Length: 392
Image (tube, rainbow, N blue to C red; front, side):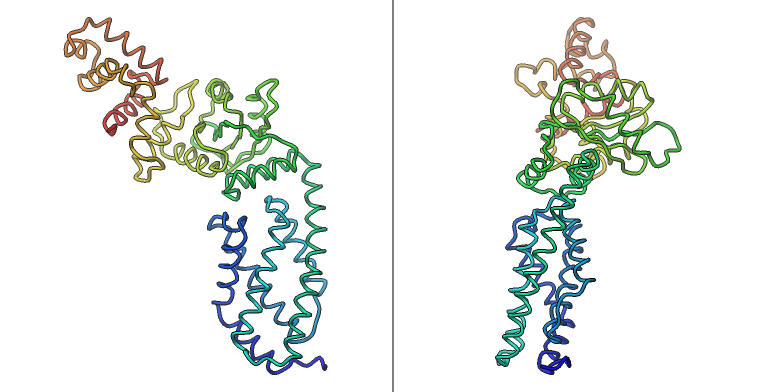
């Protein structure tokens, strides 16, 4: 066969490359048939579409010309494999995605050329088998090499893992567990995601050293669960054992930093935790930040509710803020809180409830102890007021 394009094949190639539905069909099939790809968030799908479009064009060209993958193709495949190793997508799933794409490609060609000549059909089969064999070998080798490099540079590997968690690239606990096992680490569960920044009007981009310094200050001695730090603009983002949340306020206060610590989300929802914390720091009023205290899940959810984009239902927000006060046995404390907020002072609230003022103040102290929220603090009083108002 000559090196000139075969007319029938070229006609099919031009038709398929010009039809955006072909790439859409490939992406849809991969998304439906490969579980790891089904778990990808919308931010990752453009990359999948771009790779599908490139692969479609190259494979059709090889079919038309009876060609073979070139060194530039192999370099690109190795780069894709290295990226998948870095983001934790298993190489078996990646190779399966290519096989699914090849099946869609074959079906699309058959639909456009139902009477394809035997020679053209044999050429298509030979090209696909050869290409899949070559890319499997190249990508497996590159994936393994990158995986080994990441494991050797543990700190960098953990930072990349945290970056991927923040970006929502791990949507299942299973995929996250597989990646953690390859790195030989145990992620903290329960965990604390702390987003922190220095106080002050001007906050330039944070150096990674500052984030790792904060990580060292918050390390829990003897804890075998891994901690990690990365940066997002002017902020440090730390993944810590849940117990570290209790110390975060004191450590940040000593550095004149402020922060938000989220402890109520599961490991497959680190991206949600980061968004909650970052939005809380963006929107919290200055008086919400007090020395020795960080914003918590409850603060973050109240702020999301006030901003019109709640991440939890109102009754869940109320439970987060009020905690044990929602128990029937604490009804007398809820009555004291309601009277205090409505009356505006302990003395006035005591008169409403026919209590001695000292008894009312004692109940306010109990509220503080049970909820970690002081009703006398303006911001914390506001969160308590919102919670008792929206509580069913």
